[in-house]
Image 1 (spheres, rainbow, N blue to C red):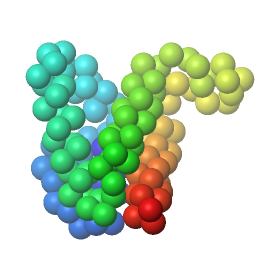
Image 2: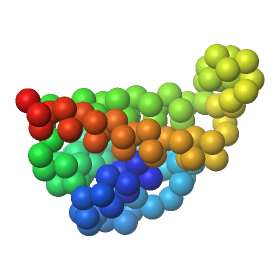
Image 3: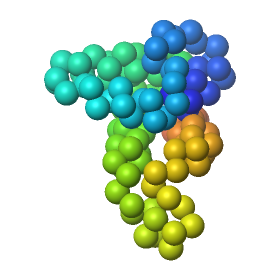
Image 4: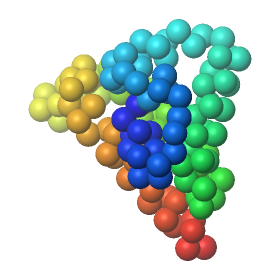
Length: 122
């Protein structure tokens, strides 16, 4: 996942390549395989652990909120509901994974970094 890779690169944290490899479409296909609650919990715990390592000065609550926002955005995007097609009057397409990939990583990384910057000031 590119957004996680950007955070890792900024913080020089190493992670298993399987967490970060592949494009968003491939991630979506892998995500659909996690049908059992145990598998979902393991995937969440692994990513949350990596985020805590990558962002050690970030408040733990902000890590959880950021993860919650990221998974919500991924779920809506991967669902290809057509919502963005309607909102944009056809300018954007919900199945345009190249456009998603071009934008989502920077958007998500910036969100985590901003949350953490705020939590380090309080």
